[in-house]
Length: 158
Image (tube, rainbow, N blue to C red; front, side, top):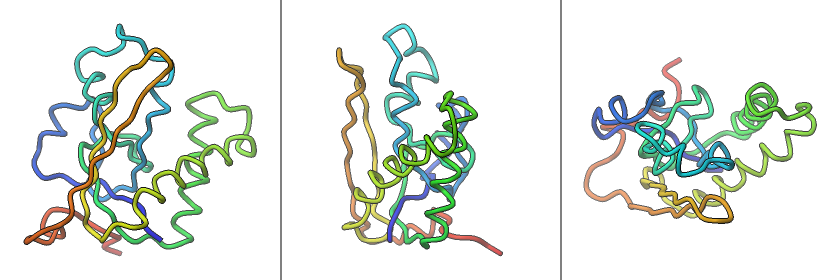
């Protein structure tokens, strides 16, 4: 199974996001955070998070780039539970049981984007605010000459 981990090609995320994601954190689009936003909300670093930030599932930070990587079933299931708990704690879901199917849907969306990509394929997201909500577009960049391991941390050092 595949999902995506945050990476940094440079230090720009430290400057453009209020809360930058750490390197190597599992990530999803996280566009749901912007569901009720208006143009008035799109100021400064919040605009950057909205425009092209992936959401880290571990820290809740944002990253400009993610890279496709293998994920174990146990890790994936733990991320679903973690996101369901976040929906309760931060977004007002009535219970983890109610939030879990929505969390699963968010992770499945990301998994489907990654499943046919080779490891280390870069993904980028861009969002626009539309009359009926948020529109997301995705771009892929296949790895070429250099291995992304030079930049990205995949897995645990334990």
